[in-house]
Length: 395
Image (cartoon, rainbow, N blue to C red):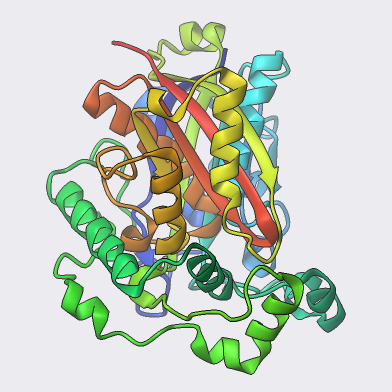
C-alpha cells in the first residue's frame, strides 16, 4: 500500500510581476517546502528514495531537472535522487500517481512527490514546443488555446452564460469561506510574507461577472475557431461565453506530499493520513481537450469497483466553468462534494503544482468531513487527464 504521511504547500500567489511570489524562483519554492517537511516531521531525509516533481514549463530557471537541483539545495544529501516530469497541467498529479504506483510495486519505500510552477517568471508556452508554435503541427492536431477548447465545450453542451457565471460565483464564495475559516492552515507554509491564497475575490457577484466581456472571442476571430472547427465536426460554430471570471486564474505555487509504505510509516513514526488506492491516465480528442480529467475519474473509479456515489469529495481542477458543470451533471456531484473549499478558478492554477495541491486538499477535506473516498483530477493540454483515488484512514 501507499500511504500519504504528510502534505505541505505554498500559498498560491498571483502570476504577475505584482504577485507576492514573483520574486521567488520555482526552485526556492520547492527548497522551502522540503526544509519545512523535514522540520515538521523530523524526517531523516537520507531515507527518502526519490523526489518526483511535476512542472509544465521546463525551460530556463525551471529547466535542468528542477527536482534534483532543489533536493541538493535543500541539504538532503547527495544520495537522494530527483526527477521532473511533464504532463502539462496534470504534471503534479501524475507525479503523485506514478510515485504511489512505484511504492505499491515495492520499487520505493519512502518518497516525496509534488509539483511546482512559477507562471509569473516562466510564462505559459515559454518552452515554445511544436504543439504551440509549429504551424503544421497545430494544423494537423487542431491544437488550440485552452480557452477556445473551453468555449467549444460550452457550445457542445449548450451551457448558458448565466450558468457559467453562477459557477464562477459559487467557487469564489466557497474559497473565501474556506480561507476565512482556516481550512488550509495545517498544510500552508508562508513564503515571502504571503500566508494565504491571494487570488480569492470574496466580493464576486453575478452582476459583476455578467458585465465581463468574453475572454477568448478575439483569439477565435484570429483563426483559432477555424482550427478548432476544422478538427472537430460536432458543431458549426463556437459560442464565446467564458470570461476571466469563469476561467482559472494563473498562479505561482508548489506542493509536496510525503508518501511511503507501511514500513516507512513505522520507521518515521508518522501516522498514515490516507492511502492512495490507484490512479488513471486517459486521453481524449485533443481539440475538445478538457474532458480528459473527468474520463480519468471515471476510469479510476471503475478499476476500483466504485461508483461516483461512493465518493465523498471530488477535487477537480476547474479548467473553466463549462467542464465543472459537465462533471457535476454526469457524475451527480453536487456543490457539497465537488470542490467543497473552492477551486482553481478562485484560488489559482499553478500548472505543475495544481494536481499535487488537489491531492493534498482532498485528503484534508476528507479529514474535515470524516469521509472515506476522495478523487483528485486534472485535465491537461492536448487531451490528457489524470485522476488519483484516495481513501482516508481513520485516526
